[in-house]
Image 1 (cartoon, rainbow, N blue to C red):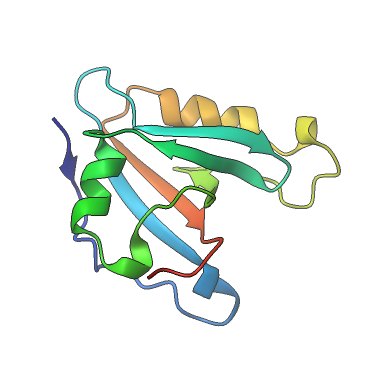
Image 2 (image 1 turned 30 degrees about the vertical axis):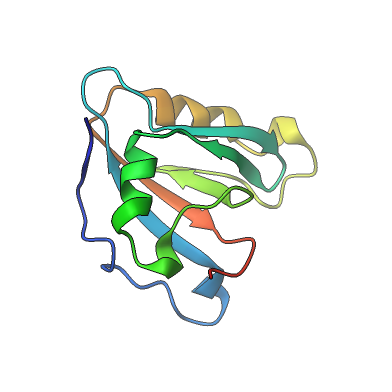
Length: 120
């Protein structure tokens, strides 16, 4: 079972350039995963699926609509590891470090996510 660390309506990333980004704090228990499937791209880790019953799914059930994680959204950072959005190729974007961070046994993972579409 997973739990939410921060109230889903908490931090607001709403200034001009930041309006497309939001932050979530997901808590893993034991050696569980965050519940996000993704594929690597230069701009970040594109979310391809959200696993039912996972910390990400739990977040989505109680989060404000503007902070729901959606397929197609892009993970740009995990804790202190960030995607280098100025990279010219996949190898230089730091994606492997972000993936490694997401797989670490740390209890809390802070993900910065870029929205790719409207929230309805």
